[in-house]
Length: 219
Image (tube, rainbow, N blue to C red; front, side):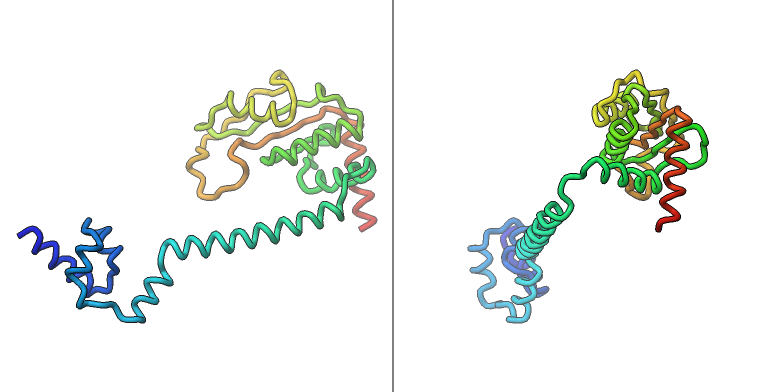
């Protein structure tokens, strides 16, 4: 009786245009049994084409092929850009830093140089810029993190300390936002909060601001 019910179910599914593999997955019946039950119920060529075109394995292979082509293309572009850009010399580093600060640096405080970002690489570049171009010591940098209340505070501090190669003692008490990182409706940043790097040096702040003033006139 159970076998008859399974056969009737298989026939109904076959009439809906399901393949042996799909029926096997749904009912747990072997393909050899299904072929015996359904030998006189072949699928149309159009339906076979549909099943082939929308096969998960075929779609996955197609996706992987496209991804490989894209990755190979981007790798070629990367090789070209690496040859075009080369290693930045000190003057190029000096100038690039101003444009980075122009976009991401603080402009309101007349006596404090601030750089705010969620990207560890950008923040690391800023540290390299000020320490190599302005003779600022790493120990003079002050760090304030903006974190969400559901984040692991100590883990976040250790993360930024390692990324920037700075002592944990240079990190001020973090500013904790009431909202949760898990509650964000958009994915922006790297999931480790926002890093604010501060330099309390009026001369550096004025030099940077006047350099940006000059650059504005040259563009």
